Structure formats: C-alpha cells, structure tokens
Image (tube, rainbow, N blue to C red; front, side):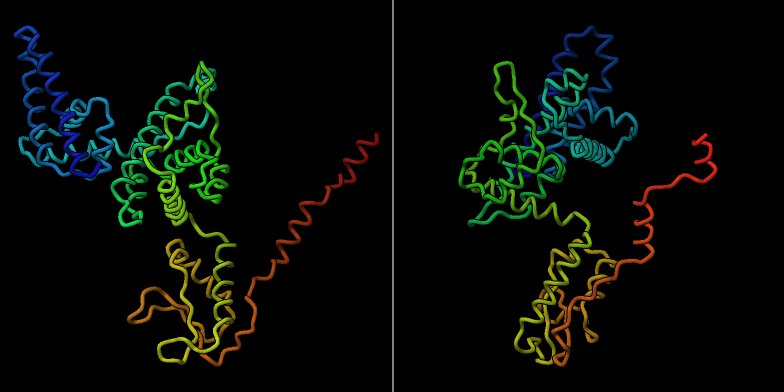
Length: 357
C-alpha cells in the first residue's frame, strides 16, 4: 500500500467513525444533542481537513492503527482550540506523529502467552503481538511497493523501520526465517543470524505456535531474504564502531595499498584506496582519527577526489608499503591494576592476630 492509498484508507476510517458517532448522536434526547453539537462540528472539520492532507506513509499507518483515530484527534484538538484550518491540520499531523512514536517505542515482548499470563503481563504481550502482526504486514507491503527490476530499494526497509523500529522489524524477520528453516531460498547466513535472535515458541491450547501469525508470507522467500539482507545492513549502519571494526578497516586499507602494483591516483603520483562508505557512515571524528593513526604512512591523507564518488586514503608513491599497522601498546598501568585486582587479598597483621585468637 503506497502513501496515497494509506491516506485514503485513513480518511475512510475517519469517515466511518464519524458516521457511527452521528448515528449514535441522532438517537439521543435533544438536550444531549445540543451538548455534543460543538464536538460534532469540530469532528466534521477534522474530516474535511483529513481529506486535504497528504500525510507521510509511516504516520498515516500509525494513526490508522489507533482504534478510534477521530476521537484521538479531537482529544488533541481540545487543548489547542482555534478557528483556523491550519492548526486543525497541525493537530491531525501531531496526533499521527504521537501514534507513530508510541508504536515505534513499544517494547518487543519476547515471552510466550503462558509466561505473560503467569506473570500478569498479558497486556504487554497482546500489544506487542498485535504490533508484530502489523509489522509483518508492513514488510509485505513494502516489498510489493519497492521491488522493481530485480532490485529491492533501501526505502523498503526504512519505511518499515520508521514505523516499527529496528528491534521489532528484525524480530519479525528472525521469526519468519525460523518458520522457513528448510527453505533453500533463505540464505545460510540469514538462517545463522536468525538463530542468534531469541524467539520463543508460543503454543496455543492445541499446541500450534501463535508466532505463525507474524510470519512474512506474502512473497517468495527469496524476496524476503533480500529484505533481510538490506535490513541487517541498514541496522548495522546505526551501530557505533568497535575497536575491532576500526582495526579491520585499517587492515583492509593497508592490504589494498600493499597489493597495488603501480600508483593508481588520477595524477599517477599516489597510491589510493577508497575508505569503506559503511565505515564512514558509522564513524565519528574520534573513529576517523584512530583509523589514520593506525596506518603507518607519513604522507597519508584522507580526502575526496574531484570527479570521483567517495573518500580516499592516499600515500605518495615513494612510501614504504611493507610496514605493519601501528597498534597501541597495552598500558603498563592498566596491566598492573588488572594484576593487582586478580591477586588474592591478604588479611592485615592485626586482623590475622584477632582471627588466631
């Protein structure tokens, strides 16, 4: 479902809710109808404003998931009454954003229904399960919308992650892979990854796993596998770099320098190696400085090149490329502190004497 269709469906849900409200109101005594006349008029204005809106897809979907979006928007409106239409449009947009935030921040409940019942957590379990099902449906919809010419666009993942967050998106994908363990169209790498995500079976009264309700099942598993690849990659880009990540990138760049036979810069005066775009996407200034400090070249510079995409590490052609990475030596003070911490502590003489007595 694309953005236009999502907005249309939201308008239809608002209209249906308003029709139901009007039918209820018409059955009330005249005094009660008068008491609700203002609310009815504002709700009609909300409906008119919604027809004019082109809300972002994730926000429209989040508001669509609210049981009574018209009542929710009216509740928001009561705190900011204004005779103008623009504030009413802002009210709808803000309520949609609030719904989106709540949906995205809803924690994933990882335990089965039986555990939730025993621990008084059925409300959290049901809310999370409902969101899991909606997330699986959103993944199916995103694949339909963004798979073109044998390629799945990154927008498919960002669209779902914006609405549900990466934690739930990856949880639903891992559950899907577990239920398709024997399908050869899912890669071995993704199967191994799915086993690292804790997903407990959730048996119902007949022993059937309720988790099948949020299996992504509307497309060829090969397309789901593509979505998982993109999702895992996009999630990785949101994570901070570790020391091992920085060292691995430095080692890769050094190896590429050493493998080059001739200077490969446009001018022919330098060796150059492109710095990984994924590394740069995750790196802060401290990470970049650490990368540079590990490469053992006096002439090293890191910059962009005119007419080329990306960022490159460059060294002059007369550099000694046989050198090893510069690695920080372990701190002597840190080693001493660790040694002292691991040694058993001896009792003081006074305490020993008291114990002997």
